Amino acid sequence: MQIPSNIKRARVLAGKTQQEMAGLLGVKRTTYANWETNTEPDIETIRKIAQILGVKFSQLVSDAGEGTNETNKTVLEIAAIVRLFHESLIKEQDNVKEAHGIAKRAQDHLTIALKKVPDKLDLAKNALPSLKTKNLAE
Image: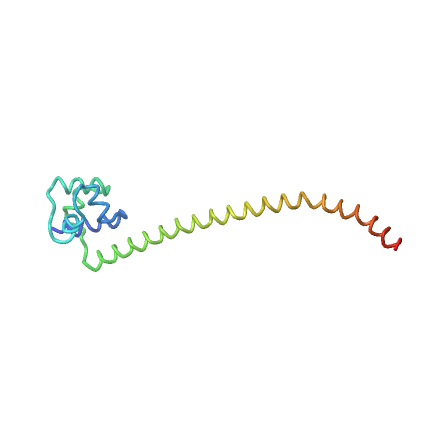
């Protein structure tokens, strides 16, 4: 049976780490890592793993549809790329939210500044006649 490789493939596709799985199952990470490499866990543990990963028990214990090692490697690589892409999208979304906040604050400041412009213009207009009078008197 290919239980260890089936468990690993299901975990990677679910986007979980060995550490997360070990925590959810109440075992050490090294114990869980062994289940993915060479030691098969007991049936009840396999059922728990299937439940956590949202897959059928039969998917973890079946040799059917295993494919080649090259296919499995490709699936794992694609899953890793998808996970990295998802993480980068989340970071980019955070950057966009931050940029939007900065733009909103800048807009608020400009609105306040523009409201003050007419007051400043009135002051300047009122100052012009007195300046002309002073210059003429000198």
